[in-house]
Length: 462
Image (cartoon, rainbow, N blue to C red; front, side, top):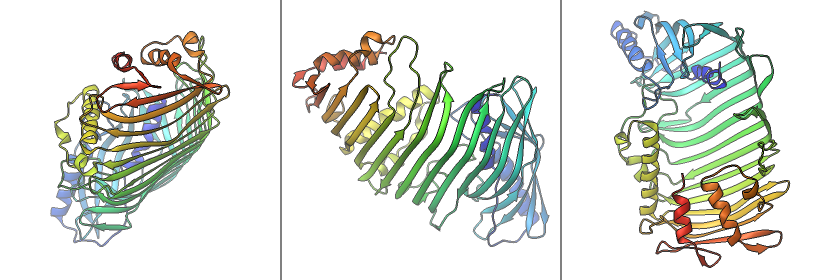
């Protein structure tokens, strides 16, 4: 079972839910409505634009029965398809669902333990066991979105059959609780925390290790119509005019991470932290800032290469005059269906909107340090729809310890072309300074020399 499938297994905790609230009368009509909505929405793929999207299937039909002040919702033969042809068998799930006065659905429930895991050919490859769990959440009236969740699980283990690797996790917490809700707007904290995750190869060797991972976000005036903290009904639908949110402050951190790259080479990272602040997002003059830092990155170079691995790195950038409302109100339903062309269309539309708005990109700090090399820089750029290159402004980079890379590199494409620019760098101390000037007429100068044709050629490299 792949690491991706193992991690995807944990996504189940974000689909089953519960909490308490003011109740509304429990009727047979309500039971029929609940069963219909649950089956209709929960069995849709989480992302309809991805063929390998997470999805839930049932054997038979959902049913709901009245039990005092709540409904007993049964989902027979539930199976969670994890996107890599593996399947988590949940059996018949039973949830206690309470209708609220405002039309929401509050539910409590537990997952079975153990839960069988099967490959694409239907062969059992192991089972998931939960030492402890607490699942509570709330669905919106249309059953498409979970807008409140408090889920915890402890001592999570994937016990494999021969030929597959084990997974163990001390604790997983997923929590988002609204502090204020009005007119479809949601404000409050979102927290996802993983503690002591470890995966092993089929022969029992260590594969991945994470001491702690934390995602923490504070949202203000999040539009539940245009966005979703957890969308279980097939993706977002076009909503009324308005930005997705007013303000967001988020942070992400990793501690004690170690794994292997695609070629089996080990690497490790002591700490990584990143924070994002988005403000004034209800209009077209939003501000987005990013702070990033990592320490203790260790990775052996590939055979025949002298890759400068940055043991530590720092980045601070800011985008101002961000057209948040324009982007939020754009018709994204007309995008191509396939992932490649869809992503390209998103990029092109976003850059066009930034250019029309004249958004500013400022890099106050760019500093990546390897034992024998370094890259430092700053930038002040304006997205410009009238400029053939889409940008006007300056980018300054200082490099040292990188002159040997072209001779030792076995790669090709844009990276080799980029290193070809090194001969144009101005000597400064032990390194070279590169000052790029993107002119309003589309020309590009490097340390005063016109490199427009060279930059055009680099942009066309595969």
